[in-house]
Length: 141
Image (cartoon, rainbow, N blue to C red; front, side, top):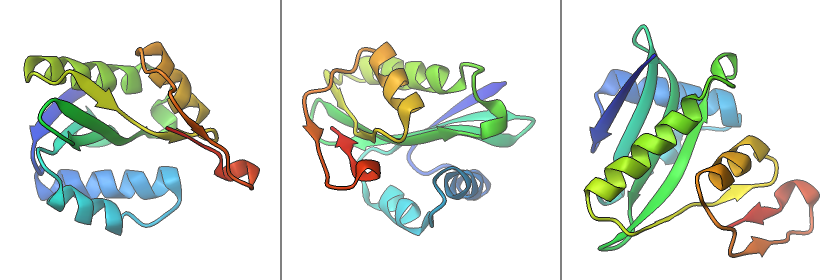
């Protein structure tokens, strides 16, 4: 497995692969993701590659002088349970420390339990739980 870090937008072929993987994992259009990637401050893109195929990704961006938002990520279902998500998160956090960030935040939903567990294993705290009326829409911040 190879890992690549991009400060800013990655090459178009990598973006396309991220968008395809996003749509496969989340079963929704990636159009808003691509648009937001182009608009945010200090975009950080990390990818896991198996023979030049993107099998995992982690995106984030600056929210303030010392604050970073770990925005979205995912791993191809055929590559899960191999530590790829954890490696991407570690790479992101190492980069953040090297670049002077002191706060990193994220959000997730209960239906993404593996992401919730990964966040907890990497030291995230759960300061707020938003309860929605539908069980599948409950969200943690």
